Length: 424
Image (cartoon, rainbow, N blue to C red; front, side, top):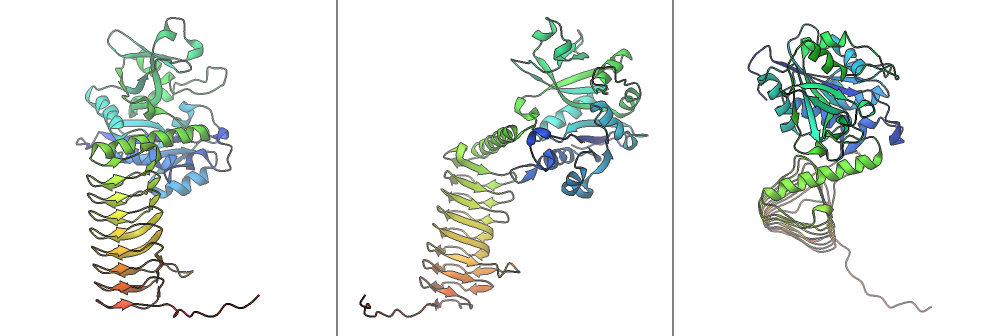
């Protein structure tokens, strides 16, 4: 999102102070991962993706774990006592003082909100000059959620919690997600008026809406199109559910772009993966973030394509193959039971069953380089660092520790000797 007016500052505050006791973990709930990425990091990244000028994490319980994940990419506010959502935002108010624009309120345990949804929320808030814009959802069964009460003009008149709702209000299906976009100056003013007038003795952010309405300030909402975006993680079952939702979302996007996925329930493609058209992904394949795969490839089944890998066009990656930090040229075949790590292999090559690159010497990761049109026999060990030229042939069963020049055949194995069997 491009902010053209210098006064249109966008700041995001992320609630990240909760204890998350239902996770039954020694780790903060917020550092548990979906597809190798911490929940709170996912929320931070979506905030930055829309052009937030600053991101503030309100931390508390196990704050050092959250700080280790986010480092200096955000600013920190500290909530020592958990006295409600309003109290959490109060702790971040020092970063808001003297600024004009919008502040977004997100939650570190609501990790799969889409960039477009957040952009729509902020854009509407600026365009319609709303002092509070809520992200809401329509639930057929809204039991347990705060209901959105609107006036005839569409303003958000109030948010009524389930326990306080009358019989008519309970029929309302529009619910509050807890995600907001506020005018910075009016939010600061409202926070000073919050009172802990409830049994829990907490400061509720929902009360800000009433305070703004009492001042006659315009409010509004954006209804989320996909309710799964506002799901939170409280326990490990919900963590698995959101992982499943994200898996299906990512797989569906690749299929829309021309990739065949034979079984979306058994294919695990992480974020930020590029796959060319007419590539086929067989079941039980995992493809990590940052991997690039060309057109007309065939991947799997039971393939593991790890970070740093770039695969050309018309490449075959067969079953039980692991690829890491490896570049593979066009039309090369890596059929089955193979490990290639820290490798660069050219075009039109064939790698035999059971071949591995021995890239780790116990201290360093070393590179293997293979030219074009190489034929690697079965059960070959390539002990890095080692370079094979173009058009080389490596005999089956060889352990290659020295470079093989272009056009040569490498053989490195003991000569077979047949002896008489010893009598028992």
